[in-house]
Image 1 (spheres, rainbow, N blue to C red):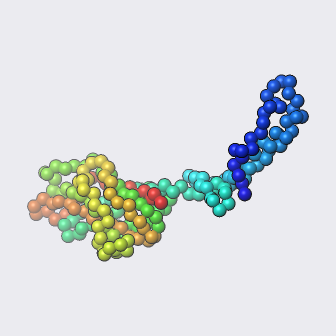
Image 2 (image 1 turned 180 degrees about the horizontal axis):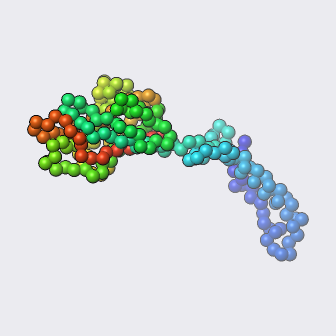
Image 3 (image 1 turned 90 degrees about the vertical axis):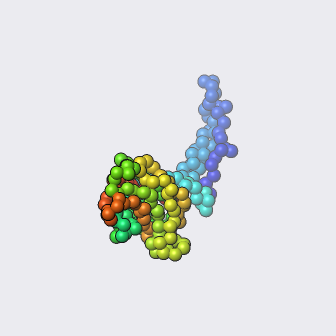
Length: 209
């Protein structure tokens, strides 16, 4: 079993002066070779992949490479809303280098793990003159398979998504393959039943465990 050689440092007493005799340092040189081999044995990094991190494995007392725990995806939220459909579609995955999510019929699924969610909106507008306003968003579980019944509101952001970054205030645990959706609370002007939210909105998903 590899052991970090902090307690077996070699002495420099036979090599720290011009008058020293290097032949007397043979034991120290051997100790340095042993220490170097111990360090090599403690790190298993022969085949790293891009963005891997080192993690300690207590079963063999070695540091090994593994995929970074911190993973994220950026999803684009659609703008089309209707007062007869409570959902707003996720229209595309703009970034997901670790493949933690996929799209199905405007909703998204997650790989097993624990997640945080943010909504980010640029160029937002809150003018009462607009026929369709974004209001707030809810993160919902349409199938109810993460606890609670169908259409369970998992988390609610209490600030209207007009401009900036808003955090959904709950960790979400997915067992793998769970489907999630974004429910809009858009407001409509009189005699207006559908329209487009005047915002470019993104959902940021961060896998924390």
